[in-house]
Amino acid sequence: MKMPPLALGERLSIWLAAQTFAGLGLVSMVVYLFAAADLDARQTESLQHKRELVEHVLAEAHSDRDLPMLLHKLDDFFLGHRDMVLTLLTPDGNPLYDNASRPGATSRLKQIAFAYPYWEPSGGALSARMALDTAADDQFLHRLAIALTSASMIGALLVSAGSFVLVRLGLRPVRSLVAQTKGLAAQNLHRQLDGSQQPRELQPLVQQFNALLARLSRAYEQLEGFNADVAHELRTPLATLMTGIEVAMRQPGLPESTLDLLGSNLEELRRMAGIVNDMLFLSHADSGATARREPVNSLAVLAHDVADYHEAAIAEAGLRLRIDGDAAGEFDVPLLKRALSNLLGNATRYAAAGSTIRVEISAGPAGVASLAVINDGPAIAPAHLPRLFDRFYRADPSRAQASVNHGLGLSIVAAIARMHGGEPFASSSQDTTRIGLTLGIACPAAATAAAAR
Image (cartoon, rainbow, N blue to C red; front, top):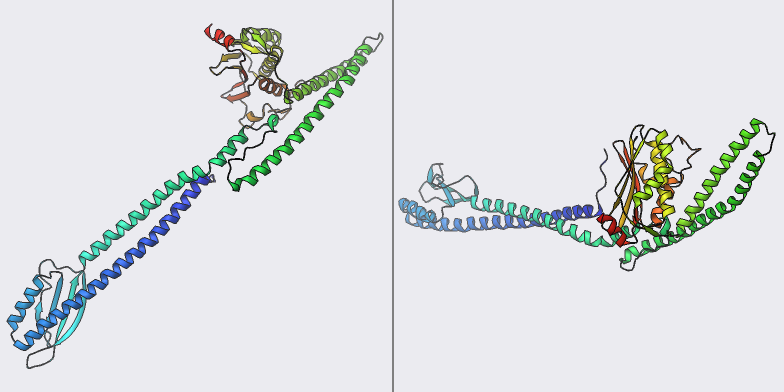
């Protein structure tokens, strides 16, 4: 499965951390190499200095010809230089002096070899091998490597954390633009993004986006105006046709087949008139029409009135209805009845036989009332939920019952919610579907009284 791309802040933090680690690692390597080279130079210099001292002792022995005194001086000399090892071999290969086996000696040695004239009559030269124990320096280099590696890693982590915070701060203007775009909808395309606090790099993007919004707003207004004009112009001819068919059906002596045909045509014209009226209502709602509010003491009573209208259809579908909760406030009663009627009709069509349709009413603490219709039945796929309130949208691709329902019912519910300062909502899971709307309560006193009951 393809992994989702990393966020911009995470990407920048990772790259900065990698670059920091590489940079600090390179610096640490250079420091380590310089330290190792300096120690090597010091070791070589120390060996050369000790060689000169040993040659001085050998020169004294050469003049004195006193071997025991030579060995004694060498022992005294190396007593204070326990990190030094000296091996002297006579010209015939026999050991003259060797302190390599003394306590504390190690195998980590840096060596030099040299020759010195032998003072015995046989002549020849002494073979000398001097070595310096580098264990302490090697341990120092090891500790230095660990310290530099740790410093590089800690530095990279600190830079990564700091860069993550700085990137988040730097992306704050982008998040501000995202928050502004979330509030955009078809009804408020006239809004412009506020780019006054945006950095120069984002100014062209904001300007282009605002220009796009302006074009979309003009196109949407033209489309809504066209819809309203068409709907308005169709109402009169449709009414004329329906009246003509009704008059024609009253004529005596018409054959039964003709009456059936006229009745079918009249039914289609009434359906078309309903679509036209709904389109005209949606155009007015999208043009900024507001609800005509009046005090409502009980939304539960209003729900019972609407339920009485649907009683026959609910009973015919083998369903039951229950109304829970209550709220009060100022609402547009006809519009609210229309929204609830659409929700009940939708639930009746899709509820499982023998189940109970539930109407839930509640008043929130923020002056918002909620009205939801819940039914048990086939769950709606998550992909369809965001589009349930679109015009002419049907989750059923077979367009079942398209001759009866033209796909504007939930769009009208959404429009009525917006006219009341609320919004529609829908959820569906485990064979339970919940669709409803929130409503702004314009009369807090009435809402408080209803909550007290």
